[in-house]
Length: 253
Length: 253
Image (cartoon, rainbow over all chains, first blue to last red; front, side, top):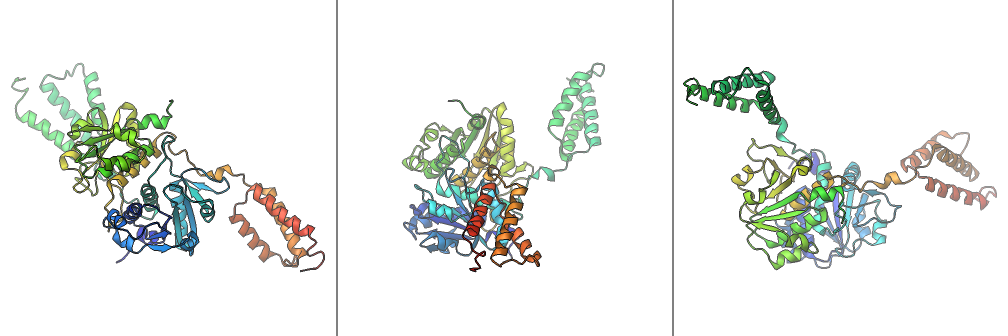
């Protein structure tokens, strides 16, 4: 299958989970990676793996889970990479550069054409050791509420995988569809307001001799709605129907 | 406790889970919200709640879980809100504006000072119904790999909660620390290169009569390192130590 630019680049990303205690988190992390198109899952000395709980939580992402590389130490998982970022729950040694997730994702993908890049996550309780962090070129901390910063491991993987996908070419393809809607042209809107005031006058709701206040309020209302061409047509249709019904003309209000 | 700007605004955010099947997902969603400082969790007709599995997966976020508002229908959960965004796994009716997560978060927080705003998530299997989507002003789809788009419910909540935190005032406070490091000044770097070439000449590694190639390569190498003041001091120390050891002068190379 032909891969898109995003898919190709994300194949070079290794999500590395070190000394994970709960197999459920491994499965959930696999699912998080798979949904974002991350290519590789590496497991450093997992406590229990393979495990039915991992398979269950991976849901349909069993392909990535089954292809996970299990190794004994972090250096083995980083062999062949050109850059690695360590996830930490708190600021560490200040001498290591610290990158927010968005910037970490961007920088890693800039380097991915040159070789594999890694995002390294520690144990659920103890995080990464100082020695493990020292093997990485930067640390990354996901911003959290200062009163409760305990992100679930798979949730942290999800955030980084999401940022990596957004940073990949075409990864932000889901744009606002606001721009796809056809905005009404000036003359359409003016035509509508003219029509509206004519109908409102016919039903005695509008006094052309004292127009300012009402017309301004109506214009403001419809300006906020940012009318599309189709919506103007609908509104004109309503006005025409009111006129056709003979309301006002017959003095039935 | 005095709340920061981010905390105050995020108190106005309701994460609404409708007809959730698995209590574990409710707990994990509560934890995801709590880590990002989201203020309110609303549950529309959950299949099982409260439930020990929800409490277990909420980890320390039991406060938010215990304060969750349980209601029978989505209109009840949206009463009092000024805006709601519906999460969908696939594009829906094109007439509803579609916003990517980042833009949805930004727009919701712009409206939050005027009242509560909601992010609405559907059932794990069936998502949101058409009637439920119609109660919201926009839909939001998290970008996923086209070959596997099955995000876990709590993982989707985590992504939106993360974007809401980043969009809140001061929520992106964890910036790159690159700027905190003290870059070396031009004269520091020039002094280092002069010193380096002097030592290299002393050890016969550098020929001052044919300097161009080596000096250029060394300058390129250290330019890429974006030397900090302290690093220049270290390198100068190394050079001084080499000189002090009498290497070169004594012709020991």
